[in-house]
Length: 398
Image 1 (cartoon, rainbow, N blue to C red):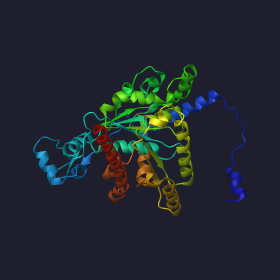
Image 2: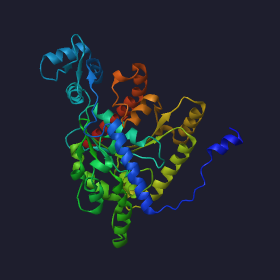
Image 3: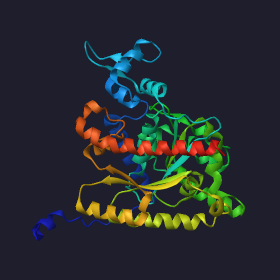
């Protein structure tokens, strides 16, 4: 590009005077456009639909062969699916598929007396695929027969969007975590709602949730003994018997919400793309949180996590990516999961439609590409499930 080209693309030198009211108008205008695009292209609740599953996919999820599926269907105890036409394979809804999985699974069930484990997905840097990792993990665990609650602690409400709700039009302030942090509700049960995805419940978020960052310090000023870090933990305890796992998506900052999420969790998963800036940010995450946690009464001495892991996301097949992967392994050693969640056009397309890899119907994409992208996500959820079982065994053996 030469100087003459630059002169044609120069930003107009126009004097601007922008008020807060102007910013409100800008927000309203942008929100209106988003609503129009959502209505035209996307699928918010209740129009968002879970995928269906063929007999072959159902058999694979259950770990049995197609002949076994046919035999069990003939006994009449399990859903038989819907025929898609003469001579064609049957398809099963998500709910039917999960029914099959639970009926045929040899996985250990949550023992009586054991509670859900709480996993926080956290990273202070935006763009690390925190939300897609959280929702994908939640969906994947339901496909292993688990009942999951996902909590959106990010005022941006991205997890809420992926779970099928429009935060600013279908979620009210009193159905977020706000009443819990205000002290108006004793636990999170009031905010739990079902989603389009069977066995996946949600505590939603919207922008007003950011008020927590002002409310909590105000309470602390009036009561120096106020345990501001333990609000979410206390709010979760009464519902942990209702689920196998709770997954918390956190804001990209060390906020009151993030601190509460990390303190209430049994495990921390840090998604980190193998890029230089993301690696640098990850080192700050551990330092800043540990500095805060060690100042909290009882947390430093009593808090123990089941596991703390780094999972590489948005992994590219480039030399630079491989170099940074080496940095991550050198920095975190065995805490880096041997699972690479790749960047792909399939995921980019899914994200553009407010979906995850698990929302994508296999028939809609190249089967080889889909299997290649899906496989590491399945391994990731298998790992999380193995940690659930380990924690339950340890809990009931005490």
